[in-house]
Length: 62
Image (cartoon, rainbow, N blue to C red; front, side):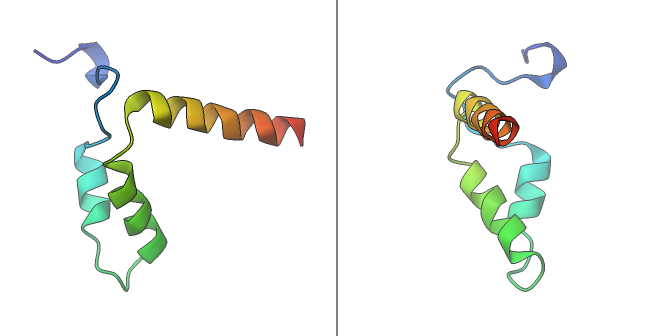
């Protein structure tokens, strides 16, 4: 059974349907976006959250 709201337990990679679709884009269409989605498959939920938080705080500190 899935957790409410579609949340993934910590330690599991980012593998949602949207990630898979973007990762499958041809190399000539949005190559950086596709590369980022392919890389995201190896990032777990905690890394994704805290990495984004770190970027946000760095931007606010500016």
